[in-house]
Image (cartoon, rainbow, N blue to C red; front, side):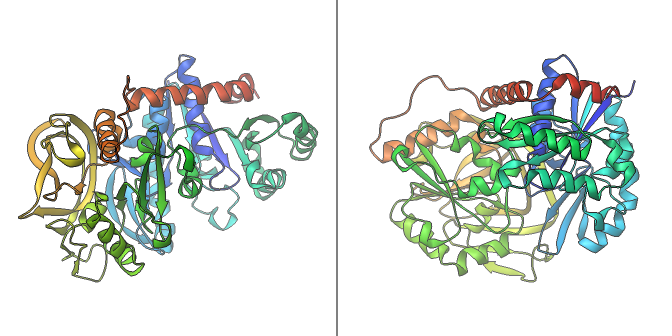
Amino acid sequence: MKAKCLMIQGTASSVGKSLISAGLCRVFKQDGYSAAPFKSQNMALNSFITREGKEMGRAQVVQAEAAGLEPRVEMNPILLKPTTDKKSQVIINGEVYKNMSAVEYHNFKPQLAEIVKETYNKLAEKHDIVVIEGAGSPAEINLRENDIVNMGMAEIADAPVILVGDIDKGGVFASLAGTLLLLTEEERARVKGVIINKFRGDVEILKPGLQMLEDIIKVPVLGVVPYTRLSIEDEDSLAERFSNSGQDDEVEIDIVVIKLPHISNFTDFIPLENMPGVRVRYVERRLDLGRPDMIILPGTKNTIEDLMFVRNSGLEEDIIRLNRKGVVVFGICGGYQMLGVEIEDPHQAESNLLKVNGMGLLNIKTVFQAKKVTTQVEAFVSDNSGLIEGLEGKRLKGYEIHMGSTEYMKGCVPYLKIDKVLDSYALKVDGVRNENASVLGTYIHGIFDNMEFTSGLINNLRKKKGLEEVTGEKLSFKEFKEIQYNKLADILRDNLDMEKIYKIMNGEA
């Protein structure tokens, strides 16, 4: 029997579609249903590798976790990863297809519609409910032709639609009414209710406006969701995360993540953001760098171009200077590659440059390959010095997404060894450090999700500053996330008309 479905669309990007969808997945799970998320097309630089080695958007990973499911690429069959301002890498069913311009992709979409339909139907056959997320706004009238992610997707799935607006941005009544105005009559008929999201203040003051809105749009308001801070991975909170620098009087350990122009998988740092006494700052100007305890060079979709940004902005010079004064530098994926002495791009996968010098903080060389590495891995700490003192033997889980193959040379000490790749035994070095353990790099995304490792790392930074260790029972990051998903479900139950939402899903409203 094919699943019932519900589609969450928004008046714009960043209105909270992803979190509303995740919260509904958790509500349905709590109510005893097998609910699965689905987003036909996701554009994001944050991605995840499934157990099968397939690449998908992290928003659907969050929603799958909220639904109590293992993430599968069927939940996000098309992923677009911007490589430049004009081109994106197109990933279909978890595998790289090719790079395309916006015009090329628009013309290619009719061929993707059948893939989307087939993938959705397979998913719907396995579950009771599918929660479908749209992208951007359905009222982009220039993109209506060949649409496969908003009303086009609603038609494929024959899904009722709930429209979400963000009151925190201002103009929510106009954005909801205007969106409906720009839809065709058939599209408007699919919209069965609206949600006002991110409300601050007393909802009683808002109620007269809700009644007036219903009179205008002839669609019920299903609830007003309060502005809430939850530690749930959310791409919509990107700007807020990057501008948040924490409270100075609570900061004991200051960590700077370099905000690269093509930063990817910034979700790697959410566990650090939730550590007691730790502040994570995202910095793109040397003026804001200060004297942190650790500098992280994150993953990137364009290592060479972002290395040039770090160099030309003066950040490279400051990072090297601070490292010489004892500040720890940690590189992940593309950031790891930047730390080396040289990057070669013989296939010109990222730029027109065949070779560039790296920052020279690690004696490693990287050569970009034609094929991307996408795999889940398990590893163990194989060293016991500096930032990783006391962590030898600790096990880690994560995943790799990279084009490069990296060779380490004299002066590099392996500190991380992979012993499992996609459930198969394979022993190899993944992470190396310099001789005094002040510079470390790894390809493993999700490394900080491993709380024993991360707590030990932070305590070593604390010890270096003469601070006491933070002790006590530590929740795994998975347990921590479960608490957050349940809180999100409680918020939706308290503020949405779930009875009416079930009726909408069942075709009764």
